[in-house]
Image (cartoon, chains in turn blue, cyan):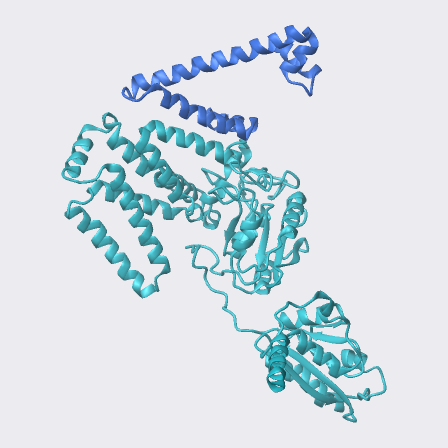
Length: 98
Length: 534
């Protein structure tokens, strides 16, 4: 799987996965693939967010609404994403010690 | 009627006569004329007949027929130099000197230059621009009637502070010299430490009105030339009327003007600047300011002190740890106290919790307000202590200690633990002076976060802080290197200060070329038999 993604990425260097899936599979199926791809990440993110917030509400702050934790951690993520990939990598470098 | 009108016209003309327009550049660009009087008149006009312009007319030559004049700004020149080496040479010695007595016919300027003037610094100028800027920077202008070339003679000498021990960065071991306000003295202090032809001083003038002399300093071959080029580009882009302190330059060229962290360092110590230059950094000296800028500036430099390298390894390493601990305490102790008191009582050991609860009995404020009040009053005390004249400063510290410490606790306004927390935080903050500007802000933000959401808020704050720190760059070098990006080799000079013989390479973060700084033959071992000089 990783091999396929890497080689595809190398083949279409200046395009995103959603862009080149249209060239490979055609317009409608390509859009569908893109949609599934986005949907997959939205789903995963939602699950992770929920787990994270659930953890905090159940363990530390039983009276605080769930949304507070979700929103605050999303804000942090937005900030990191805005600063770029390098920043995310560097922060992880600090947190997980190389 | 007519008379009144005339008076009005006269008044109008008089008012118009005093023009407030700045000098046009054309007026400066004109070249000197052959007539002495025209030149002197021009100088007076350009300088707007200021009271500190001094002009002295005299006759030279064996037949006393040639007129000459010197012009200078009073107060910027050394009068004894003028008397001894300019006036005396021209008026007395020139008549007795053989075999070329000064007469009106020959090439007088050449003779004056080659045979008569005994001043060391001398150059010829042809335009008023050079002439006026020479005068304004303290040089003496000599004009001879009949020639359209003027001599600029170096006789600078003005009142200035001597070389003193720097107030901001005192050391127990190490040189006691500090930079002064005079650019030349500062460059000399660096040159004396780095007697190398590769040490480069690059001169710039910044400021439309102040024309401040600014010097870029680097060592050719060690510095990454790209940093110098980038610095030059940024300095040339500055278009401001005045540079009064190196802080102006710092704020105009720094990478992250909105960040609370400095991306350009400053120091008052020539030995520190020399060390930074040897590491491959670039320095900027500003005339009129004892603070030299060093760049690129990394976060880790905040916990480094020049004394670390002068003392022996073990001690320096321990001191580094203390500084790191202080860094964490000064930012995180008050927020942790707030979070622990208001949300996470279960995390505090029971005995300690009971003591703190007993101290808090009857205190009218919540923990956050209490800590905030103490924090603000501490910052006020600090500010008052800096601004006050020194004799009153002592009084302030007594008032601060007694009134705020003792009385506030006794009166039951704030609890004793809050006072202790504030005191420790304050002391810890002083240990790392370079980052001291950003600590109170961070502390406040973290305290608010901790008051809102306890440890979770604190965690969030730290994540934001890390993302921010990691995204910063100073002249292309990541601010948090060598931690992230991790450079194992450079870590030798962070939390530990490895022995000098083990740090045989220059910091890789700054420049990757020419990295070796210590004996290439036996790099990573201590000297065994024979003594080697550092």
